[in-house]
Length: 410
Image 1 (cartoon, rainbow, N blue to C red):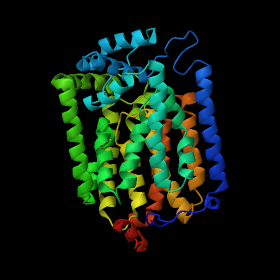
Image 2 (spheres, rainbow, N blue to C red):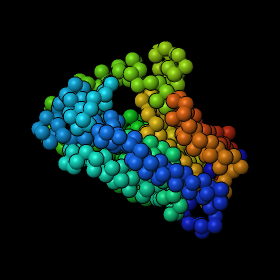
Image 3 (cartoon, one colour):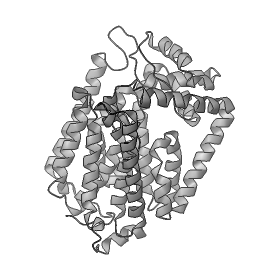
Image 4 (cartoon, rainbow, N blue to C red):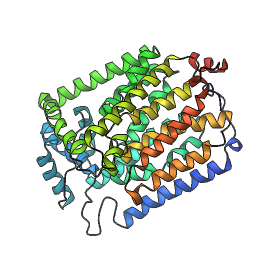
């Protein structure tokens, strides 16, 4: 098995990139671009063939922002009122709800987007949020190839199609991890901004304490508190009351009643429910996995025998494993551990199984529309297994070359 390695510092030439990896990434990038263009002209992106808005996730963001601009931010959390605004902007009704469930600080983003016409905001949100994601992937890989890798990730199309925030979430987690060794304050700012989707930040306090990354920890806390305070001043106490009032109903709808098909969610919780398991059994599996991941990550981040890139990759993958509420667009975050693995491979050589395994990851993400099953959970497990394989000597308690200590000193 490959040994843990230090965080790379020397960029390699273009020729060091395996031709097969470069070709597959190029093809996937072309596929993503072609699908999005085809989607627009075939009328299954933004507008249908009648010129009406297609009901999809982005409509709840724009509608929440519209309610903020109209002076009613707390009403963004009311499912019935939200849907009335959504139907008005789309020009047609639909079954179910696209409910707004983000903490009040994200209303700032929604309000900015609502200043623009719906279609402009829709496409603009995908384009603007793509930029920090590309920057994070470029920084992690350490080469311009990181941009191609970022655009090739199969979930790019899915995230842009539904107008979701996967690019933003991935960029904040990627920014937190790539900046932590050298710019802890900026890293903490990224982590604090991630509080708009708190389920993906649950492991960070644990590993930051384990690794004594106090500057990152306290900066993140300060930023999160500042965001909450500003949203309270801007949107009032009522918005926070509405958020906490409606959250149990949202959890009931999606994690208990299964209003979204279980195949749409990509967690072990959803996998158990997909195969007919009861809710209590699904929670048992979820809590066992979450507990195991948390303990292993705390030990790994406390250790000086594991290189920083592997710690970062494991944390990004772990953030996906511990949440039961995980849709395919959220698997944009999986691009972050993949980027760390690619950087390790480019700097120190790929093992024989890594490139074929990453190809399988891409295939599992791409076949989801055909199967409607939690194939993304399988992709996350494969990436996690690749990280575990790299950390093999540490698992076995073997002595690790002192090169790993260099990463800790950065």
